[in-house]
Image (cartoon, rainbow, N blue to C red; front, side, top):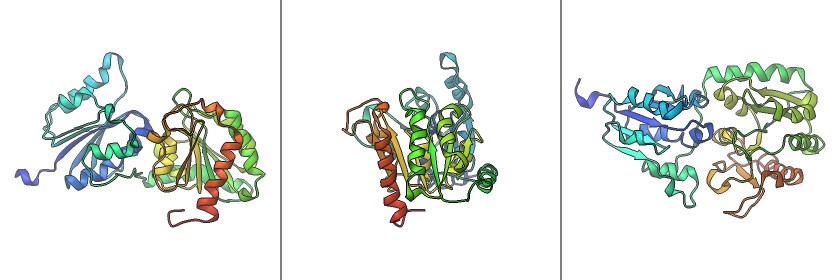
Length: 325
């Protein structure tokens, strides 16, 4: 077969974290624009891997399970070094990108982090003409798995109603707002006339039951429990059915923003200006609103978050714009 008919081969090394994988997901479409017909191999961690199973142009996903002495990088190198790549993109800035043959390399460097949002820096990495908006690649399997969890709970409750999705966990120290405050927030929202008839859907991974418990208990018959009930793409399909989303600085926050759901992200000692949710229907509330300043997430009061949720409702439910669901 002539070279002109061989599909370009692209290696996309992305993160072991769900959030960073979502942030960089706009790369998939851009690769197709720059190299039409490209066959994309994605290397990523196990939790975010389902995000790419239905992504256009992706024909292989290599899962990187962390090993001692960087053994996972050695394993990946062995799997990819024998291929002559047309493009290698590495958002982790690893040495591997320099150790495999390729016509072109795009390797992330953390020294570039001087004020732009991470989404914008990722876009510049590949030389995109504009900002690459994050995207979810939902499939029928994910939608079916979400429906199997949500629909029976909707039918068993007081009525279908709009859904407010809540993600009360983050898997990095210091990023989770205290669980009891999530319960207090739900109590405030249940008493708020603007949320009459709303259902409160808790989302999270297999180990997130304890942080979600106070909010589930507060929501009572109006609760929908989607914690640990599927992989990340099933969780994304569940969030896609929500009218609003509120969550910690986490992968699920970025999932909600990529789905186009009006999203409120809660920030403590992390860079909201760098890692905030991306898109026109997103907002943040931080324990320290000064750029470059930090405070523990515990400094965020229930009243502050409640007010931010009401503002989100005002902006996108009470007076919805074109981007609202």
